[in-house]
Length: 215
Image 1 (cartoon, rainbow, N blue to C red):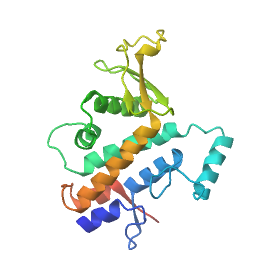
Image 2 (cartoon, helix red, strand yellow; image 1 turned 180 degrees about the horizontal axis):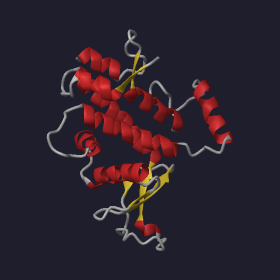
Image 3 (tube, rainbow, N blue to C red; image 1 turned 135 degrees about the horizontal axis):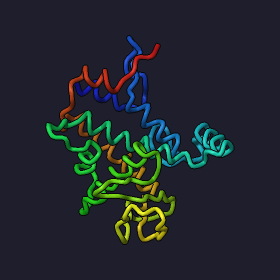
């Protein structure tokens, strides 16, 4: 099983040749890296050596898609969800993203983890940057500015009133720090899974849900 997991989480795909099987986890992660301007194999920030990816990024800008990190962040959130569904399966209805963050995001304030779950819901369910939860409504801002935070919580809780434009109600996500966090979580989950520290769902279930056969 450890060998199978290692292949599932390896950037070298396809993971099996006969039949040619590819990890959906890695398809999603590589897409996130491409859209967010990261090295597709390592997740590191791009350098001048990453000419192919830089050319793609330049093409995206020319097509008016310079803000493709918007979609890339969604892919990174899906990655967290995939990891939470595959490893240490829970018998409760605990949110898969929150479960992974609770284990691997070393923050004292759990509100940050709940907020990232809210960001996923805003992007996936509402197609934008507002999460209209009855309990935790949020107006998100994606920032490329430098910060020592991943999430900056609002000074005042938003009341679902769209006419109120005060920045005090904004929940800020610092994009680069968020990406670094998810890349670090992926690396640590991969290490723990390969060395046997994590349990996982059945291999056949993983193949059915998280791989595709090419051709």
